Image 1 (tube, rainbow, N blue to C red):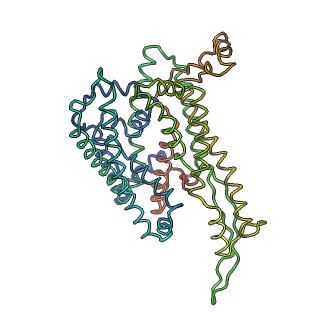
Image 2 (cartoon, rainbow, N blue to C red):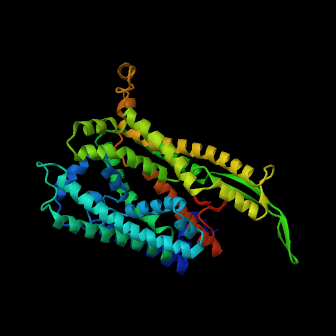
Length: 470
């Protein structure tokens, strides 16, 4: 009797046995390889050693934050230094503008033609933002480091124009790669580019753990605990990202000619984390701005703000948590309109059992969505603060009145790890984790849909994988 193979190995073999799916997967991998090669092509006119020294002291600034999403391209200041972030910013701006600009709101409701128009405007806005960011980056690099650390070899307008053209061309090329992956590959191209930029740090993270273990700075118990925590956090992310509240919707029967339409029961899915990773990106960018300004300008006030908003400080934690919760509610209110949903349900003859159509339905949906958004915001706060607590701990010393007393108490009880962290300088961030797990779920779900459509078994024999989009 032949030995039964693993379902995952069988699914991988099935992928490469289907010509169309195989070509899509290989095309995606080839485009990601081109993106990674470009991340190592340097921009001329930069002292790479001086730039590396600057980034060693900018872990909590917006430069360190963006460097993670570009896969180290910003730290090397390659032609892809800005990565795909200008395109993400332009997409968010256009998405928010559809609520306040009537013309864009009208385009968003015109189907495929309107979507193509908005995509074209997003590209134009990306180029404008990249030119501006390229100019500001060039000026910041000229001023960074002071006289002791000269990063730019030949500062001036020649260098600034060269940086603007180079970075804009690089971002436009990355944008083209993402669109090609979406059209001719598998998965969402833009998300996969961010995914690739983050996971390239995984080998160095594994190497770091091995070095810590071999030099006995960590023992095997600490490594096992770290792996267990990571597995639990990843499992929690998968569980919550798939979680949704299903509101039952009943459609009445309609007779049109000799045909009967409707009469079926369906549901309206509301995700627990409707905002995704966008609120975290907004919040992290805001709390990183003072640290960035403090590293660029020799100003006592900015230096003080930079210190107060460094990782683990009480003010940093307070503002970070408040910003995540605020942007969760703000972003969900932008992308989901309960009144519009209630009108669409009523327009097609539907209703929620026990709830009157119209305003009552909108209020009912809004009430449930608010509770889910609060739960999703708390989930994002926990996911983002846990890695930072493991890295830097929670500094209780600056707390008014109780800070020094609590710090002495923790030290005397051999619990100083609460204030100093666990020494985990490992590649482990909440924002990165949310993106990696979410993109992996979406991509696997698309591959599984392709396999099932062609009558092959998916990655799981018991039920389908449901991505973040349901």
